[in-house]
Length: 136
Image 1 (spheres, rainbow, N blue to C red):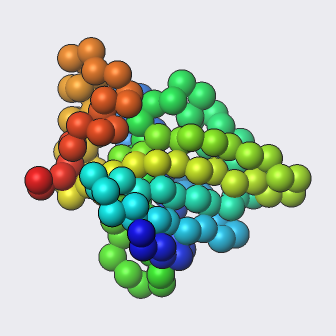
Image 2: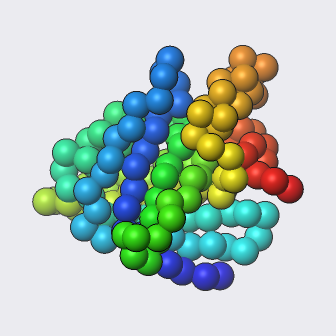
């Protein structure tokens, strides 16, 4: 496994007509490459307002797009397909744990792929592990 510092997180709900970004203000975060089947774990410590936003957009356990920057803010962003696993209220802040896969497509292509898969009747877990957005 490899662990990296998560320095920026923007979430894009995928159950809407268009992509609307929700930039999160991180207190701290990390991202873990489990090095098996392109599986990643993201953990973000957020303030109350952002924690509530994540709870709201993840209530139905839909797959989200996540744009992240790791290690330092000037690094190129990476796109992930993620599903929120836990939202924990810790008082003044809270943490969010997501699992996902690294995607190699652009946001709009991923968004269209997810909408198509839902129309085809795929479940959210199937979408997450479908390999959408990967070059493999």
